[in-house]
Length: 223
Image 1 (cartoon, rainbow, N blue to C red):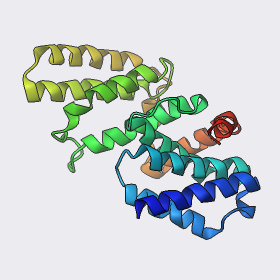
Image 2 (image 1 turned 60 degrees about the vertical axis):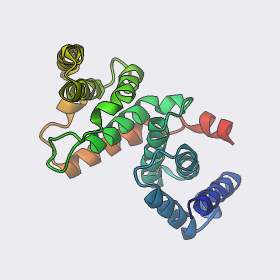
Image 3 (image 1 turned 90 degrees about the vertical axis):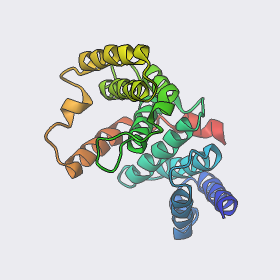
Image 4 (image 1 turned 45 degrees about the horizontal axis):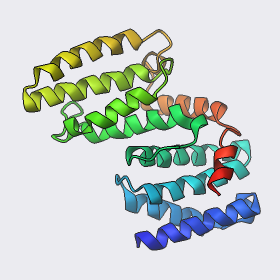
């Protein structure tokens, strides 16, 4: 099932690229195949499959009008974030900060328990990934305070599991770095006081303004 859907979505992406517009490419079955593949993958970091999905949505958004591009942009970045979490490198640099922040949000969701405050037992195992995220997100990115704080909480969980005092000391130090990074323009302050729908709308509007033709070179190179 997985291989069939990957092949189908890849073929749809190639037809969209050749046509230059989704309207002249595959019909509704293309979106359905993409939806089914994403649903099948779930939370798996399958680099090949997510890469194909990112190219499908990337092709659609590059060929679409401004008004019809937003959902495909978000789906493409989410797919690329899954590739990032799977260890992929050389992702499209213009989207780097968006990919890294989306990867951080996905990883944070994995670690939060059903009560919203308790970490799963696997959280300390994500320490190398959190370090990579902190290393890759720009110093002036509005989401930096969040990802630095998440590394600190991961190290705290590592201390709770192992009793490592060095992990505890580093957790405290990184927590202070997170507070220092929480400037007035921080994403956390930017979203403060908004309900969930308003937050989503605000993030999408910022994404919409940031991403127009910046994917073209990466898209062309991939094909």
